[in-house]
Length: 545
Image 1 (cartoon, rainbow, N blue to C red):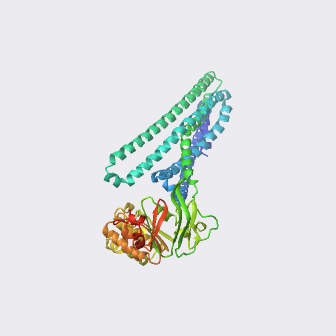
Image 2: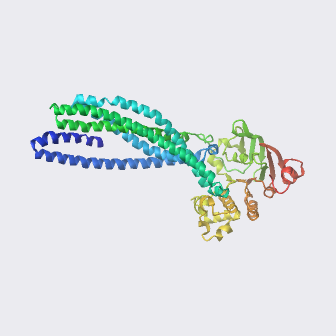
């Protein structure tokens, strides 16, 4: 619509010069100027509506794709996040936003410029076919220029996008770990590392600008040659009386509508390449399918008692490097077992197989005799409460970290915090359960975060509870509170405790000792301590190393 309202402009100039001026026709002049004003107002309104509609569509597309992408990323397996930096994943969100915005602009520009290249050549041929052929002679050269620029700009755009993603990842890493960086005195190291990446991004941006500017200048030279050719011939025709001045001026106006889209298309090459790379990076993740996902018509896992069995389970994060080997083990319902072993022996990995964070390459797990591969993931994970080694608290209040907006009665929340021995601490705070925890719970001690995280898991009321290093890095008082909490929370549940500290595990019904990804010993603390085995060697002193 915008383009069609622009078509009469040069022709109005022709009428004013060829008809109004020599004939002193004031009536025609008034009509032409009023018409020009109406067209100008219509053009302005059309551009306003077009801009509003484009923005409306763009914002809603970004919202839709961002929510879909976020939901998709949340559904991906642990193995995906094992090999990705958080900052690099966040850069994909920015790529998506930028690609949607730029794609809408590119599509609009392509349509407009392509229509101009279709509509205006016939108009030029109608006014003067010889002038038209001279002006159109530049098109083949511009086409070659577009293809050449595409070849070079695509390489630079790809490298620039990758470098920008690396910068995003490293920036997030340095900021999220700023306390560790300062504590270790690594400010200069991280500064120089980031500075090198920033320098590389800047160098690629400058190179991209130089290439775009160079090809743009080459396009200007081609257009200048075309303008010089038709200008010389056109003015010669005007001076010899074979072409009216108005016709020539109208022709020049329409040539602008021809040459402008050519320049725009050359300028779009870099934008198109960058947008395509960003779109590919977005779909590179969006097209990933979770390795662990529900098949159609899978049933819900019924409420379980908590008997867990490992059937000849072998698991590896990388092919050829098994972390667990031929695990055959039964955990009785509502019992408490402790997994011990040296670091890297496979304790946490074994526990993560129970809620199907990973699937073994060989063998399978069952709960109450049900092969967990045959039931919906959500119904499995709702029955397995997992308190990770690192207790993550999210920005917000304590109550928000406990309920996540779910309608849970305060009495139930307080029961869970009392069981986790953290209610008295929360109640002593000026704002109680509305106290803000800060980013990553920075305003809480490790022991307090551990107990809040434990209470959060207890609110699930899951029949299976997994505690990964619940007393790691805690002081004596915090460890005492966790030990007291464990006495309460394991009642009526199948509880799996992964720990290094002897005081945490010796009251377990059974202790499973792992070494090199295999179960080497299994029994009670008293029985294992009397044997001259791995557990006895590990338990020398006060800790399981």
